Length: 457
Image 1 (cartoon, rainbow, N blue to C red):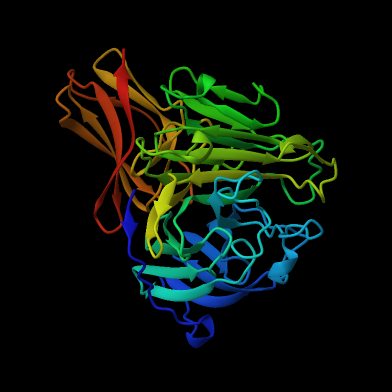
Image 2: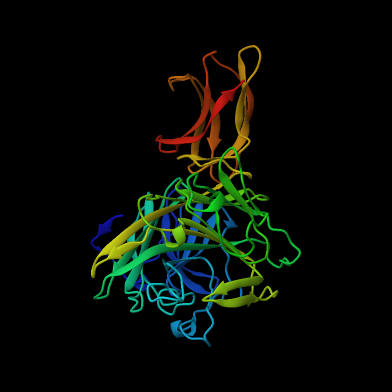
């Protein structure tokens, strides 16, 4: 846990800043109208983000190339409702705009140290203030600062940063105690994913989306997974016995699971288009987490679930129970004295790779079938697909038992916009024991491994 003093960056109102066109090969930050909203657009030629400060500081859409990842509610598209109309009273329905937002955890309706949302007219629905932190060809960053919430006693701020040549999106979240009392909360990052093509009937269509997260081998939950809502032991979830990675398949009915995963990553991957959305974060094993979970997945749809001892029936109406999937990352619970601030960082990593996946590395992520096999005649066959988080050059390295590369082969230029693959035989020294794909960015920097596998016999 890290507690830091709050240091606001440039707190300029959006209207005070000039628009700036995207420089060729670099980053851009500009004000635009996006689907009817006043928005900020961050782009680098690979990733495009649209941020709408007026609706709870949401990142309303994230795109890799032209592919949109996030769900936007068609019923609220382009609209800005008064905050007091979004929850806070029994007769005020939550205005679920979609996109990504911050909430406090734990969620609950039984105690005052639980957050009884959504909705929430302050933290979820009030306007955030936008300020430019950085704007040049190499990087752009925007800070979103929310209002002070008297119920929870906190104020959220989040800085989103996009750098040139990469599909990684960096986030810094700040949670400040603005009350005169001690408070204890977690930062809860919620991302709502689109799961079906527009106009598809969720009752009959099958979503190609899959979720992935490693289970904790020493988990407090049976099998490493806690069923929070919906069917226990749902057959849509399975843990790969070799990798220890949970895979879940979206279907249109209510379900939620939590994992006390210590691996520091989770993913949502479209098996049809091969577009992957990965979260990266730092897990702190010595800390307590809300619900005992660092990662949660919510499958939205019809069905029954219990809130505050009341049975809720989500209707079989796509307008009232829309098809969407939430990937959720939680920080540890942190106690803050008045005026103290807690900082939590995450990343989004966007790329293209098939399903199922292996654990991501610094430079990318590979399909689970990626492998290397020794052949007769001193050759090794390497075969598989992978996705990268930087544009650049991929290199296949063959290493001996000491970890030293004894042979290298170029795999050519790669980009996060397209899946990459290798399917070749290589003549290598006899003492080779491992095959590693490494990535060098366009700036010449080593961006680390993408996948590392043993050379099988």
